[in-house]
Image (tube, rainbow, N blue to C red; front, side, top):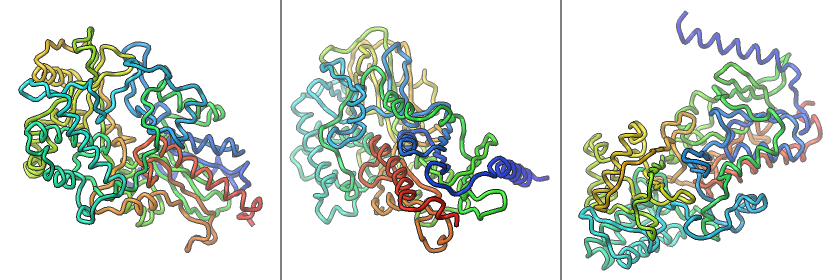
Length: 528
């Protein structure tokens, strides 16, 4: 028997076993409706928590990784204080449900001062030390001038105030064109700092380059007022996830349960009436009335074609392909002793020819894989870390981040120390520990968060990705139960993509769809 035939037989056996075990599955009022949630990140946990609170009694969350939290990943590798390998901040305070939840649960760190400052890429203060390759430290006022100008340009993009001529440009192209008309461009230092600003902005956009991000589509992103609340308390971001986990009954979340396939629109058969079958790689099978898919866009890009039967509609498949999903990684360096001045909040690296210079970028696109030899140039700098007086954190994005993930931690640490010594001229010791995130390599994630590429109608694609299958009374499914497959996660929010509160809100959004469905129908109305 061929391997493909053996696989098909194995899957059929799983299906038969699943049908035997779930013969009692039937269309029911919400208290008996079976809902499977795929993914235990903030979207999945908020969906499950909302449904449980609404009286749904059969909720099963399947998490592929060995822990709940998804792209929230709180660790303690350097002692009792937390290090965030994933999500770091609550983005904004006003009307932010995660901020309100953290505040309500007493999870915010209220103290101020250096102990509560988190490394924040792109946020420049007078306490940041900027160094050129020549070891010359740049004057604070010159750096602030360029960073302020850059901030004004990006604000125009985010506030949809771009002139029509920029509508089809990349963010990098728009920024270059505007900067070239500024007196700041005449200064060599100014041009170099501007490249640093673009490199830093790549971290916010999760992109390999700003030349791969749409300028005009950024206007759909909504920044909540109140700024970043940069430091959660001693529980870190995981404490927020734990608050949602506490709302769920024992056994509701199963880890190490990667989903192999989702079969929906099943025809009613003698021994089952559930329209959705979820098969796990380990052999388990779950029948459901509804499944809420909250896996990252990066995972969908790699697996959606094989994951769904019948296949996803073209509009959704196109959205998965067209939206961008990039990698953002952190490199933590722990030293035995602090070697940087106490008034220094970050050591920023200003290259003579950085990867966000247009010519450098264009050359790297045509030279094959030679950019890998200069992967470290994508690191913006090394920032201090809250509650860790001898730890620095470097940020790296895009293809360079993915390449870094393939390297040994010892090698990455050596490269980082070599850069710190070269730029500052300080006596920099070898790190006692090196810790890297690897979101691009994580096979159940494949990146960090979403961005809009040039030429993409982002709102249309986010909306298509969020659309449930099938809608009530949708053509071709008039006799089928509606909302069999629903989608949540930051990539499904047109205004709050990239954010944790966006993920959290989409989980609630999809749960509310089901709550409304059962509220608007008589018990067993779809089973008549």
